Length: 320
Image (cartoon, rainbow, N blue to C red):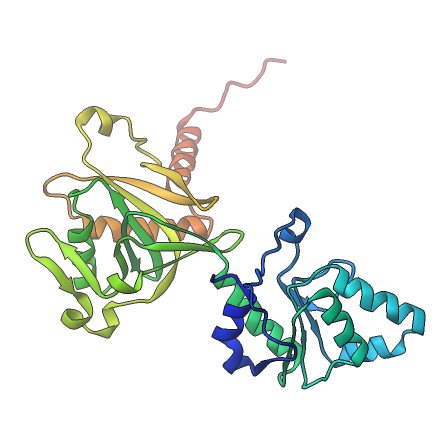
């Protein structure tokens, strides 16, 4: 269970100096709460009883705050901390929990963890790890490649030429992330990151040649482990009628939704004699300009409008 407290401690415990202050739970303890209100909680943060985190962190500032509370306020705060059913409470800076905190943890069966790291250092590391470990994921059929610094997903029907195009791009100095089944994760509200399944890493299948090891053929510089997805290029063999339907100014620009994020998509016609590698590079450069706020189609329309207005004669002056 990848999204459990135990697996998180197993994977990060050595780096973050985590240790169990209470016995490790025998049953997997999920980091995502099962109740609707728990699903909306932040995964980790400093002690917060108003908007409780699933992993509540107590460092020196929180320890000093608890020490300033009166007897009644302290008891209520401790009770509130554990009644919110956190996945665990983590004590940083080598702090040892007080007996009453241990008693309440035992009563509510809440695991306690300790670390020698500072609170912010531990929170930053765990937040980064959990963002990637618990991100929504999906697999898309295609080839994921980095072109001019942008992550480009090549999609299309089987045998349309995705892998051959990827091989052409690799020979031109670009880098491949994954062939056939790139795996994507939503690591931020508008950010999709793509990686390659371990069993497929370094390999590219090209019809007629079989399986190629890109790392062995082109070196370390031809491989990239992960990349943010910026553009989708849909390779389509279109007939004349379909080609006529493509907008001459904007091209085949639309969007493809992956994990709830709209990714710009370009439909690229496939036909004999077209140099698709050059066209992909041009599409990436064109998308870079769009991101910076420049659109050649809009510029062209504006230029034509200015030329028409300059050639138009001035209207006759009104008679008095």
